[in-house]
Image 1 (spheres, rainbow, N blue to C red):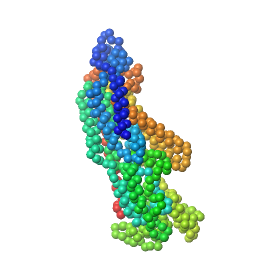
Image 2: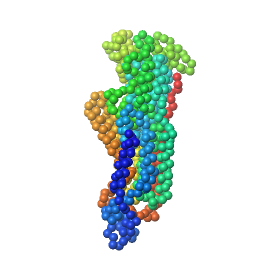
Image 3: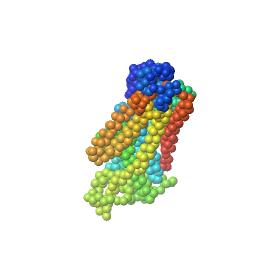
Image 4: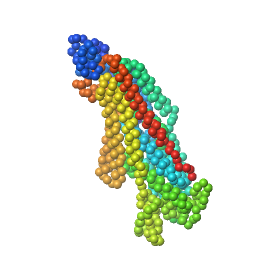
Length: 580
């Protein structure tokens, strides 16, 4: 479907291009301008009036009236050469973006969101890699069995609609009971497939880089011949796509919906839970500690779409899930450091090298829940021991006898924080904006200082594209935040969130189509018809300024892309906790 969309846009654009092509001869127009009886107004290459003998430009109105409506006669050989060199490699590279959602529509929208808002694509990528570093840091001081596996699983499940259940001691049993060691191993093995480097991805990335370098060198070596080529800034405009594709290949997201569902289905059949009698039995209910929630339980439809660009919508819920799991592991680790077994009536059994013996990890449901409870205590009255399982509805909801009475239990309220989520969002926002405006800024410099100079058709079109991309990103992020209020039954927030999300997706579709079309054709823009003019010839002094501007624009776009890749690489594969 992605390829069909791209081919449709290109085909329609070519039809429009053939229909609008007209004869145009700039050399003949320049001769007519220099004739003493010419009625055309003589201009220099900055659009200022000058004497007729030194004139090198004419107004847009005179160009249409005396020279023709288009900038140059359409030539298929020239067009196909420029299209295949400047734009086609980038369009082909879009196929290397990670998708994998349940429905093709979700992947199609993911493609439109990435093209229509590179800011959103870069934001989700940086947020993903920062989240991975956050998980490793959050568990770094925890010493307990399966901690290392928990870090890798939580990091890999950023693309999944993950729900962590603490009811009936499910999470506490998963963390504490030695019978569940095999669950952590099975789950990690099931999701450790890789969307990573392949011969296809390497060849397409190499194609883009080589085509871009060779075309830039060709244009630099013969500026008078390349000055009217519409694709001078196209490569720099699309430069954002290269670091995003490379970044996702570095991260290797686990985004295949079918594989994720299979992984949860296969591993959750091997989960054990603690009982009141102290035995560990296989869980028979439908609920598990780790589950995939469906769209009816999501705060927005984007939460259940596994394409990585939708990670922006899952960030808040995912962070809270991490805090729930980390809190359980932290409490168990603290108790183990104090040489306290799960069963209060059992003595601690030592193991070499600080390992936790499986004997120390057994107990009844009440003891298992207590083992994963952080202080301080909050009191809940009126509960009996039979109600113990129902108490575990918060992050670490557990019960303990209070004052020796068996009819009153102390319960830990929800201990769920958002970690340093705001800081990660801020850093991801800065990085995404730097990539977007760095690449588009380089493209704008190239076309801004290329006659006709200033804000014109192409530079203005690039500015609109980047501005729209930024607005779409901001709208989607605000929508995802408001969606969390919907979970608290705030109808106003739900309506506003849905409206913003839909408007942003419509805007992304328009912007994606816009950027492809403007890379193929251009029209009068920015200056208006009355102030627009057309350069017919270059002066020798113009060539040095143009060359410097092109070098600067290429350097800015390439520099922003390279810095982005290095930033992502800096946070990929953070140190993991030592294995137990």
